Image (cartoon, rainbow over all chains, first blue to last red; front, side, top):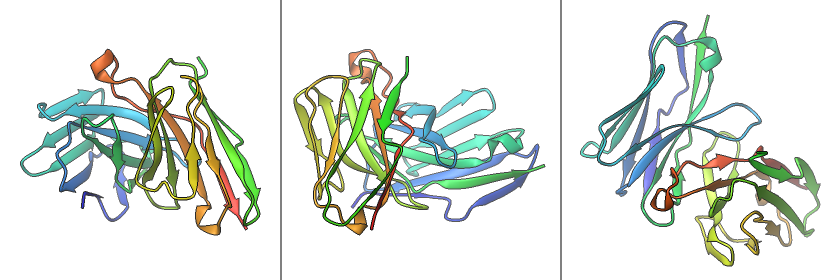
Length: 112
Length: 116
């Protein structure tokens, strides 16, 4: 069956460092992968989308890589700030009506 | 634009009661989705719709029903509520890339449901 795994433990880092979150998948051939941010008590908010034929995407301090051979995506936040503290979800979708399968998320805490 | 709105924000139901969770989007998106999120977990797809009059089951559809009579609205119906349906419910919408959109899903603020 399809499976998505994100960092199993919460991630704690110091302000200014780079946070790296992982998303691994099995039994899936995604057309694209998305990363969302979720704050407590709120709905997820879209951050970045990367397609199967793309290796890397950047947006300000965010960078996403997508390796379809390793079946893995890495999500980087450079020069992290306490305001980056949140849960980050990865989601994979095939071409079937855009349905997405979400991972369980990784909770990131950036300490000042 | 208000984006995706959901009502109510909170609700407590007794076992066996029924209710409808409302979802409306004003972005003219074709696709709409219902997810549930249990504590510490990711989102599980309940039902989705690719347009008015068309709905399909997701990963966890049992105990729920949906309808899509308009582009804007996608209500989720719970019949005979059970404690296992205690969760936070999120509605989302998107516009597919194949039709000029971006595939990005826009989420509502959620409905926190407790079944006692």
